[in-house]
Image (cartoon, rainbow, N blue to C red; front, side, top):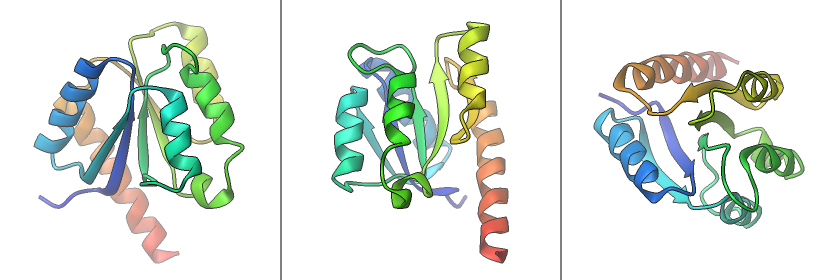
Length: 139
């Protein structure tokens, strides 16, 4: 099975969640490269330094120092080359309706997924990203 993205960045302050998500993505051959950051701050530094600009970011909302919403706000300040490439999947334990609405309004967020990530959800996301890349290839 071919991957649906070149690279993914996992942003979560919980290393166990990063490990589990990484293994699920690897098992489902989601991406060729999977990178991680244990905080929004570390992820922003990677992106600002043009290190491993991902196609997809799986973003936790509830993190210390820079939470997911602040990360999204700061991501919007990065150069167009970063913003035009990156798409965000919010992967969080928050099922708060306010959080869901706020994340869904952000144009860079393509999905809001409650933890834990499942094989079924990964298959849905694969279908979405494969279809999106096919449309991009036509344009």
